[in-house]
Length: 460
Ligand code: FES
Ligand SMILES: [Fe+2]
Image 1 (cartoon, rainbow, N blue to C red):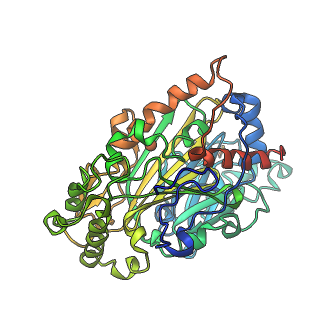
Image 2 (image 1 turned 180 degrees about the horizontal axis):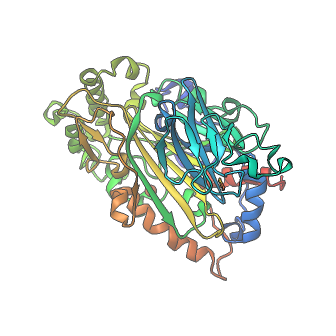
């Protein structure tokens, strides 16, 4: 980490190859030095282009399979001008439909979550549809001339596939299979028990910012020194590793636990990290002998013991030591980022607004492995450090209600710092004097996904 900076090599967080092939720095991808056109972030024409050429073609993260857990359980996804129902229609089948009644267009379901015993029933005139979307009954069908209703088969279906407990939909009738679309991801995260995690927290937030302005605040850690100074002592901020892959996918690896290169005394235990060990019910006294620069070993050891107490030993044994402590953060093009830890994951979703390119919807699912140890607290990643004290003895059996956040503080200490920046950046981007972001090499994930959007929009 101490070599002179070369932009083609960037920073490597595991120079000794401790996480093998998967932890290696990906080969450099040259996206040039141009400044992205600011209009991309506010023009209605651009948003319309994205709707037709991007959003109607890509796999969109819809929610977690847990929310369509038993037959009849459904959840709703509002995405741009559309709304979708994702329902478990049979024990082994989850389907997705446009949330549109074929009679006069009423939204069929109105709540974000629900459970039906038999049918969907429209609230306007009472038409009924089976869980598999087929038409069940047209109320007083004899009052219609038959040509009007002869072609009504039911709800319009969209493609729906599940990967590691996450549900994706695709409006394109013939998309490539989800596993192909996900590129390197299935292999990269195969060993993480993501599908066994459950929703520990679920927050929705509305931003006065384009969806791209919002997501770009979460695909680089260059902002950490200025925006999240409290993480400097225990993570790689400037020295984060960035990797670009095919299909717009990218990654950053943020180290967690060891004293970072910016600490004046790298021998000293990083502030906050003893609290983090205590959060995982380790005893900081056991690790007093460690130097600050090797304090990640305390977190690794503590997480192994955590796994024994909570029944996750077999799962965590598949991970490398680095993965037991560090944040492997992926951008799943284009809608979500995943901060993946050994026992928890943050799914951040970024969705376009129905009509206004200067607004977007943000949703964040904090996923955790359920606990067996009644005294153990879950790690609430939203606060990204010792303040992230989640519920105690949380066994995952109760799905918490979605929080429709109105105040920044509800997002958690670290996420709320990001949330302050986003609308202010949007305002600056819309100024006449702003001619486009000047992106450093720590921000190459921004160039990467914009280039992939350009490919969808026919510009490449
Ligand atoms: S709009 Fe649904 S039954 Fe009339
Ligand atoms: Fe941030």
